[in-house]
Length: 138
Picture 1 (cartoon, rainbow, N blue to C red):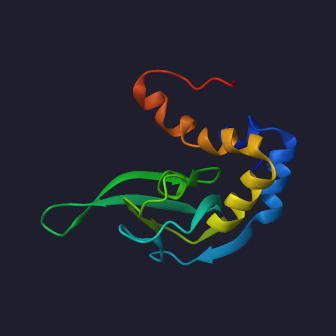
Picture 2 (spheres, rainbow, N blue to C red):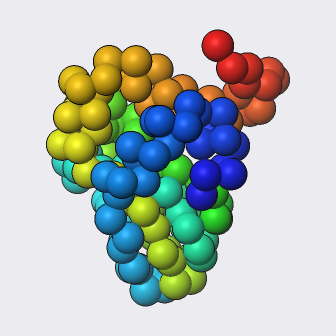
């Protein structure tokens, strides 16, 4: 996980703090990591397996908009903005994931304010290529 695109660009002390604060969770295929509308209680990093991300449609069905696997981090947008979840994330096969509780993120940033920047940069590897640019380190 330290070699994921996001983590590989983070300072070593930040990576160490994140890994110390994480808990390893296991999800069976078809199990939901979180649902649309849930409170944002954690950030997840996929260690093994794969997930699919779905959004609700007007007819009550869900549409899968993204699939990802090992090295992918998710859950940051809702958590960092203190909003409810905008998507449903489901294990598409057995998943092992690092779970970083929101309370630990707050503690980390309060103890080391410079840690806010790496958390803020978490979605860059996912969104920048879709916007026609590549993420760069500060």
